[in-house]
Figure 1 (cartoon, rainbow, N blue to C red):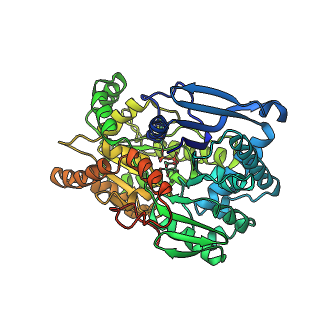
Figure 2: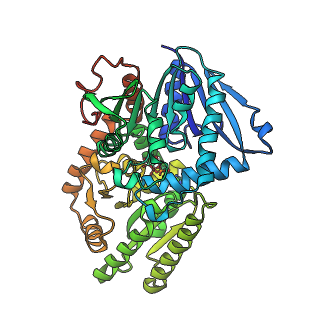
Figure 3: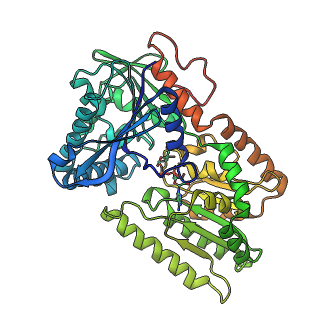
Length: 475
Ligand code: ADQ
């Protein structure tokens, strides 16, 4: 087996060691270490000119080489902030109302993908296996094929894929869809996304299924499947136990004064439904006057993508909602919402999850949602908290012990919060146990290994048939 080549928009920085890195970066690094390999992506720095962006920097750590590319300001505006984050992100999260389909951004997106392909093609060896991550880099395989690359290329989409009527609202939907047929394996988080994608291909007449999970388009055959991403379950559980000694966690316990705690943890993003969640909590307070002063809701939300106007607007709205609710309900010694706009160390976060009676994870749409999984992993076996989870998060397909809610329905989300806070211990334990066992089985390393195994399985050998759920092909 050749080297593994990972390509993603960002490459993890060198200081991103185990304590701070998320499970995904750690799992990909483990796979790279096992096979030896290369990780290519944007460095996070802006190049002063196009000529400067041609200077590729490399960093070698053991048998992993990191290949870092600087992008120009124009590239970043068009490819990253523009097409990726103002067209594809809202479109793939079903938010046509927020999508901005701009011609210049679109050509910037294809141009930067062609640039990445040129940089990668120059470093490839014949039996390298390439794994492309996420929506920033969809046309990469097509650009590589155009340069004569015949290596195996897989693609994994971390975010949802909508049905054809939503996707086809983008003026360049067919052009983008065509580029997918250059991959050997296209992976989605859950079967619903894979099904939607297959429907898009079929609707456009770009592919047909030849056998379970295998598709044919023009001269090419490729696979489509669902590969729900996991977390480093046992390690996260261990961090959460250690965090009981953490000084910040102690301060939090002291400040609660025996109140129940609800926690929400999300990047500041409209897909996460933070405003709607605060309104549901407000409804819970209104419907349950006896809870006033007895419950605290901690919402930890680091800012993200502030350069995109829709995000700045949303940031203002959420801060206003939190301020209004606090103004209406606070007492001299109690604030109903503690709203924090910063990143928290992974260890502290694990301790805070463990401390919380309820994990409130209510995205309007989410590919998977790792916070839901981390919350479950962090719980105390003897006295676990309750996960209240949106049915529109990919995680809802797996975490059947959660209290599932429709985040657009404030009244029933408020009811679910009340039910979760009052849930008896035996029910909490039995709901939690099934979820934790599942998270142990579908660890992030298993996600990584399974994807690569299917990618490397020849097309005439069944790759999905014998697999235990949830690794099932779209059919
Ligand atoms: P994201 O949209 O970023 O990921 P999510 O899956 O919830 O969403 O992952 C967020 C990560 O950031 C979690 O590991 C969480 O602990 C961390 N995080 C969030 N807030 C934090 C804070 N204040 N401080 C520190 N850490 C914080 C995309 C898709 C998801 C998909 C993932 C992985 O949108 O649906 O699950 O990729 O495939």
